[in-house]
Structures are given as C-alpha cells and as structure tokens.
Length: 463
Image 1 (cartoon, rainbow, N blue to C red):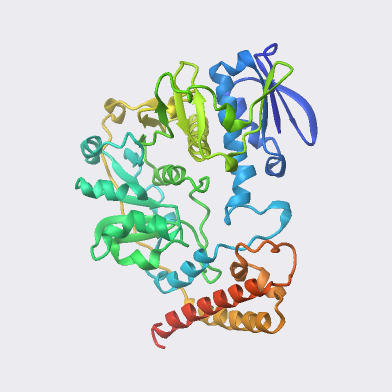
Image 2 (cartoon, rainbow, N blue to C red):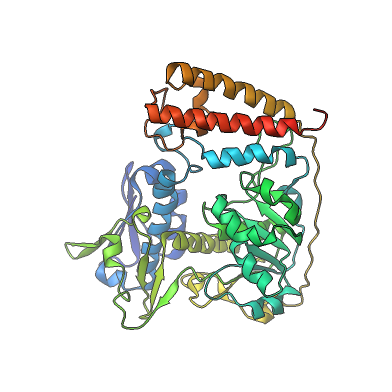
C-alpha cells in the first residue's frame, strides 16, 4: 500500500494498493486508522506500507501520524510474519512452531485440568476502574499505591519484581511473552512462595515451572485438540505487545475507565541532541521531486527517532510505536461502539494522547466508581493422557523414519510435529532432505519430546 500525502492536497490522502489505482480519501485520523480494514492483508504482508509525503505536510501532526502508522502497519503485517513463529506465514506456506513453545505445551499438559480459562472472566470487574501497570520510565510506586484501593491492578509481567520490592501485590499479572528468559526475569523471585495474585498467560508459556506461585492461572485461549469446550477469541493483541493484550483483558473484564500507567512508549531526547531530527538514518529517507519517501522496515531498525511538531524528540522503537498506534486505534473504535468506556494515559511522554481521543489521566476521572473483581473458577474434564500417548507414538514413528531416511516425512510437517525443524531454511511446502547436522538436531529434538511425554505419563493418575 502507498499513501500519498502531497503538500498541494493537504486535505486528501491518495491511497493505492497492488489491486487499484490511487483513490482520494479524506486526510484525517479516522481515515488513516481505518485503511488497514480496506486494503487486503496479503498486500500489506507482501508489500508493506510506503508513505510519500510533502515536506510541509511532514511537519504537521497528521504527517507525523502517517509515518507512525506506516511503522505500525509494516510491523504487524510485513515484519512480524518474518520474525515470529506465531505470526501468519508468508505465501500460504506452513512454518515450524517454536520448539520451546512445544515443549512447554507438553509440560503444561498435567496442569490443564487445574487451569482456568480467561473467557469465564467476562465482565468480572464490570464498571470498576482498572490500572494497567507498565515498566516504562514513568513507573511510579507511590502513584500505584495511591490508586490500588480504587482500581483493579493489572501488572505487566516485567513490572512484578519492582512492585513486590515496594510491597505492592497486583490483582492480576498479565504475561504474554513466552520465552524462558522472560518468565525468569518476571517471576524468578517467586520460587518457593505463593502470591495472592492471578496470572493470565499464553498457554505455551512456562506455566509448569511457576504453577504453585499464583492463586489462580488463566490461559488466554484453548490450545489442544482434546479440549472439548470452545470459547471465542476474547483477547486481541499485536504480538509481541504485552500492553495491548493487557488492555484487551481490562476491556474483557468490563473495566471502565482504564488508566495506562508507566507506558511511555519511548523516552524524551535531550534538546540539541542529533536525535532531535526525524530518524533520517533509521528510515532510509530519500528526497524525490521535493517529496519525502518512507518505507519503514521495523525488523531492520532497533531505534526510531521522532521529531515532534512541538520541537521535542522521542527515541522509540517499532514495537512501542505499534503498541501505541494499536491502543489509539482501539480508543477511537471504542468511542464509536462503546462511548461510555474511557482510556487515560499516565506517562511522561504522553504519546498515547497525541492525535488521539485518549486524554491525560486526572484522579477525578474515576468519578464515584468503586473497585470490584470477581475471581471465577473454571473446570473441564480434560483427557490429556490419551492425547499424550498418541503424541508419543507419532513422534516415535517420525523419529524412526528420519533416522532411516534422513528425510522429513509428510506427517511431520504439520503442527505440532513441525517444531522439530524450527530454524531450518529448507522448511516450506513439502518434505526435504536433512543435512547431517539437521538430522542430528531433529533426532535430538524428537528424543527430548518423547522423553518429556514419557515423563509426564509416568506420573499420570492411575498409571
């Protein structure tokens, strides 16, 4: 998709995709945010978003918003599918599941009968204020303590060590990240103790290692085929933004208003710093017939430098910008569909308030609402043992074929068996020959999965 925002036409965008010529649309925030609903997702995935903008328009708040929104579109459609094993694969091919995720899902199996499902928390905090606690520079323990008696507190996992250090125990901890390092950074201090908080988390995370540490654990969605119950997808988010998932959770709980605290989505740049110019080296900015042409490719750039219309500079990243743009778009949508729900920002940069319906937080915004949260239980008869036995049998068959032929069997290319080939360049539309090193790795991974399944089956009730 190409967005033309020309100086001679400041009231219109000219938008084109691979399937159509330039279409004039009104140049405003609602139109900008709605573009992704009208452009085929496969076009954004394949081509990304390019901004062609006049120099005068670039100096306006709307011009800068166009740039930030292109970063957002390129991140979630054009870059994430290339760097995230959980993102939609390109060109219709299948992609190997992350091996660590798969091992976690096996080790979580014996716990699934005791886990809760986040769907049962619908409206569990209806009309209660929520405070989403994020780990940015604005993180303020004194503010959080002052608000804790008035709000349901939802803490991003990485804030937990700092909260406990100040004697603050949140109502809910939200953990979307799944890596071993992330879970250890967030929860290592909990080993040997139990926190009177509930955890809402991705079901492929390290639940098995931290299960005793929380009062209850809610999984974000159904995961295994043996789960007979079916819930709608209730939490929407942009992987890997934990903040957007936490906001979705607060809305699912029925919270109102929602205060986003500590999420600066960047850091101010000192006046006079070379960074206080619009990220020239980070975007590959070029001049073409008096126009500025941007095609932000976030996976190539770890830092993005923004020059705000008021003269201030912000150092940020593609992930931060994507999360902030998603939240702003969500707030605009809520204003149309659920105008009674209000979002507020409490941060030093105020990035959520720029070109947005989100306002800075003031204590009077809570009105007379009181804090309430109903912790509901959930139970379902999962027959995971038969599932685990069948998995172990299939992995043993796959292992035998790989050992004998050095080639991937067709049956191993579907989820979850494809995790054996995580990171292998030949993985694509069909079977392929393994190099000696790849064969050794695939066999080792198969052995690890089989041993894990045999270990949990050995402790299964009745066995």
